[in-house]
Length: 470
Image 1 (spheres, helix red, strand yellow):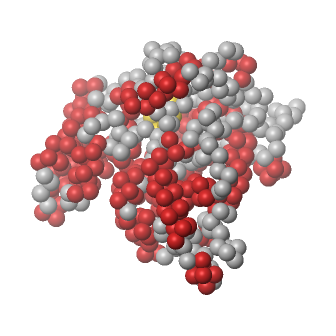
Image 2 (cartoon, rainbow, N blue to C red):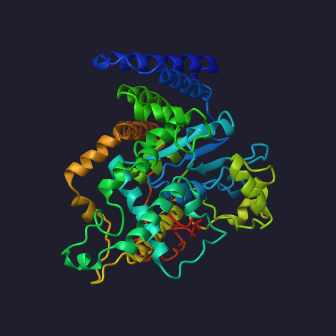
Image 3 (cartoon, helix red, strand yellow):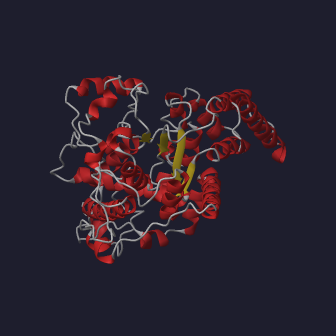
């Protein structure tokens, strides 16, 4: 039986109060400042305002945490599973939402939990988590990759019809920083020293800031470390809540027990999400959400609606960036002129998902190779990120990353446990469907699958709407 709003208010307040009391009692630390206690109680009140029963059939918000396979999950599964008339407008660079326009039922963005104040009160939340060490490494690698492209003499301007990664938080901050690093070091790098090195360490070289220095940089503290927890809490640097700044200041300036308070609240919210998946179990996560939403994986899949946004929207978009929300006309600017049936794919959802992910992996690998080829020594050696490079990292550096992401370590483990429990329950209820595999030839070549008489197929391409995996 769902809690009433009044009951949820009391529960959230008790959660915050108990967490503060427990934190005070640990190791005799009772010196959490009055200002920080005030900020924490204010945060608890903001969360309790959202504690109402949810209805994913009305709206599902995918809280996309960067570098958790969220783009694969969102574009290749969620977007293809939702009919075009029910998709909200793309909101990665700026939140575009007008709840007075009917039909908007699927929204995805890098916003944090605070975005709920702009959504219908019964909006349900789904998210994906990732092992925090892998996520930090991925964020570093991706920022280096995108920054490296600026070294190409024929660098072109971003396609105006696609989302520019540099306009999407947190890349809008991280990538310019890394670009300055790459360009500055390119002008001063000692090429003679490059040729004397027998190997090129992708995480410690003359091309860019080393991983060891990056994880200790103030920018990493604000945008990367414990980022999953901060996004679930709604207190990132991209928050819609004014209290986010004071809460982060308390986190960085107060004794460790304050982490326990924030983590307790984050875990409470995580357990309220309609779905929590983990990148290491991507297929299992897709299966669990499909079953939770009673969405058959052998059901229909839809293509994209062609982008017909007019240039006249540009001025409105610039104004909207300042206020986060677009004007009422903007959500309808996709201009879907045909019924949903016109965008149906021949193949079922599972096959469309498989083909989309296979093609995305291939495209990402090619793009990554081309970008890192620009960071090459005079004797032809270039940066090579990958499993082997990560395996050779100093264990002390890995331990330091884990230490800097202590809240995310616990959040990720709890998220994994929630996924396993949900799958067990769904299996017991005979609702869990397995994702079939594509034929080996189609996985390797990424050629467009066809539908045979037995309907064993993969679907049409899901056109990618972003320039990089966000």
